[in-house]
Image (cartoon, rainbow, N blue to C red):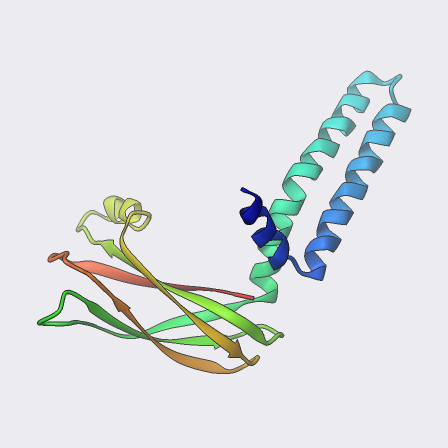
Amino acid sequence: MKSKIQAFLDTLIMYDYIIFGASFVLFILFIVLGIVLRKKIALAIILILLGFIILIITPTIGRIQMHNFLFSNMTTLSSQKRLEFTEAIVVKGILENTSRFNFKSCKITANVHKVSKNTLKNYILQFKTIKKMSIIKEDIAKGKSVNFKIIVEPFTYSRDYNITLGAKCK
């Protein structure tokens, strides 16, 4: 548990601390307003509850949205080929840095999903991954593209499948 917390703290950037600090200041502000307005019980309770909601939700949603904005990227699937004599799929793609910053590292992930003729079932199956494989690319400058190749192995599924690509960069 201690190593997970340490790993999380190591990934924080200055903007994360600003969001955490601002949400804590807003929490304190709403709690103080709730205490000052304790004569009006309904308003005081609403302000205190709003303070706790801000303390819990703002850092979480703010961090996710900020990282999506700051470290935006685009992955494109160039080709996929199932190998004949080996139980594997070769996935080739392009990772493009669309953010304003250089990436130190990007974890590119290929997910393989089952496919069905039923659209509702397809929606559900996209959350159930058959096989997942990741690679890490280092030092990607802003506005640049990097070609990559991921080998998904062992892959024994014999029916139709879809491959989705994603990347988390920092």
